[in-house]
Image 1: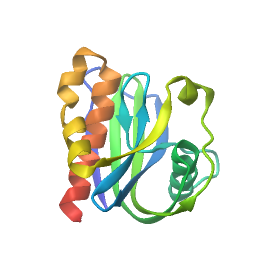
Image 2: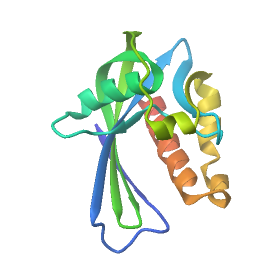
Image 3: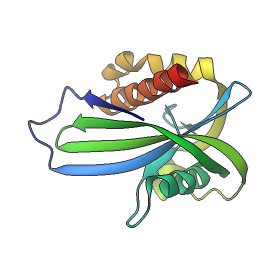
Image 4: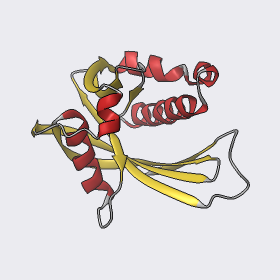
Length: 161
């Protein structure tokens, strides 16, 4: 498993807060499952924050079902990304997963307001979207960082498959 760092331009000299989360790369027939925020147009690899007592793999399964309604089986954790922005260190555990069934979408109020929907895109299209991370800096550092994170993960995924 590979470990990589992303250093945000707005990072502080030292981090005082850490947030851990898991994300799932689910590819079927050349299509990848993404979470699409229809209000903003943002795309993200499905996933979210670890809850107390939860393993990264358990978090991956729970978050993907909550966001997309797809039940996944994590096959392999292939990447850990450490990101540093302002006072935060974000740790993202990336898993290669296979779809194993359908469950129930359970969006948070914030996700519902953002119009979060699952969307299958070609892997090539997803890489293209996330490759424009630097252009997102004009919109927000958060979007630039999110797209850089997802682009980095997809590049690593493509390197190993």
